[in-house]
Image 1: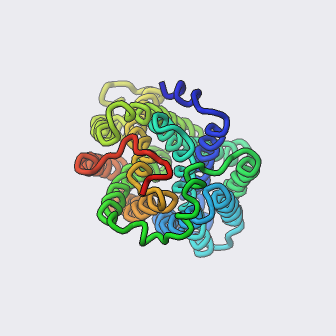
Image 2: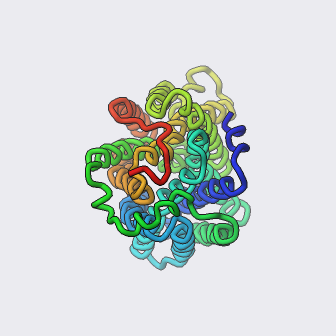
Image 3: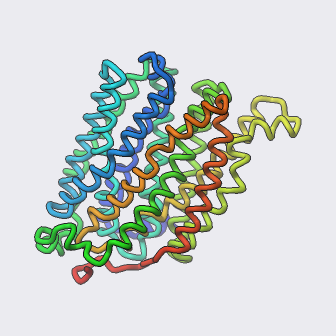
Length: 422
């Protein structure tokens, strides 16, 4: 169903969707490179994982700055040119991280990277959603958000190739992080400007963001809190997962790569499935169902090895199989809920600030959740390295909160993106 919808798009619409998908994929790829080498960076600089994980917090905390800055530029000057600048900037900053002489310099670079990363999602989502028919938004939303786990998937593959196959240190990972800059060439040659932005260009240039937001501040606060819960849901299930596998379960790079790939394969399936399904059952209902279905999967996801032992399955492959099934299923639900976010936020946002508002609310939600990895690392340290218990309790609590927020919030499924919208 989702693929039939995507096939119905014309060539220009497909280019816009593909560019937005690739932008978010490569943005996530660059973000997750640090996640895979937290312990390696800590050893290199004579520090610990908790201190290095502060780099994740800094990246997330900086993203609202980028969302506001680049989003407003995209509302004034167009989605396409600003997206090109943004992609080039976050690729360059990722490359420079490879040459950081100290942990302090690396943390500063991760903050600057966060500013650039923060601009991509809102601009890319607006470009895609404004370029396609309303009936295609659910399927395209799921596809766009699947770019995030696909980027994580590519990060896992890069980790295996760079460290296991090629034998390079963590610095080689950041050199690989410069590859997204190639997307700029595709944007330049193939991707058209958003037709909705061009139709509203003069109004977009005249009106400042505060004028456009008049009467919508309550909606903005709701979107920000909702995205805080969403980001605690995803970052709480992803950021410390490789560290959990390596430090608590003592798995090697090959096993970590396989399990992380399964985790992200589930995320891609979930995003595509729930995104398309939301076109029929509604955005809010799809989010609620996905969030609540994550809860019964938590034991398999975090305690699959213990379940295998309890069942009398002593072969290592049995533990890995259960952990893999849990990783796949948890992300079907986590990213299933996330698959609705691009269309849901863009449908709720006023047209004149669609480049700014969804991305800014998204990234302020990220700011609310910025301490997720650091908090989980600190709690696990206090529990003698028990990441499993910390992450399990975290996910259950956040899933319940997310379902409640979605139930209380508004819906604008099918909202028109044309010259008459406010």
